[in-house]
Length: 164
Image (cartoon, rainbow, N blue to C red):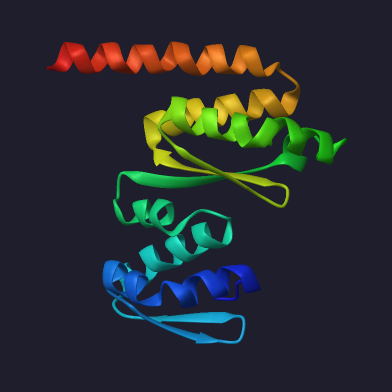
């Protein structure tokens, strides 16, 4: 698979860890990463390398090894095509605060790469993070989105208390 230079450097730097966790052999040739192993491991490996290319740290990308974790990509242009730099700024927030809060309050990993927001998480939690990101892209105020996330986090915590 062809990846950007930054992703290739990250993969090369962490090759041994990735090969061990993914149960694969990773061969890097220029801007291409070739995976060898069984088909299931290659499928998972491609998902992990794709997440690394989307600006996720290695440990966050490795969450995709677990079959309960998914990655969803939201192209900003598909929701709102004007003022992309303003929308990107709103999504990042001051010193990355907005992305960080979305990540913490939804229990998902969130990354911005070019004009795509990517989210890694479990299906039920990811839905909440996706709704929050889409609301911000459409122009909702950050405080309203934080309230939405906090409300759903409290609901999840209450559900956990009932199960115990």
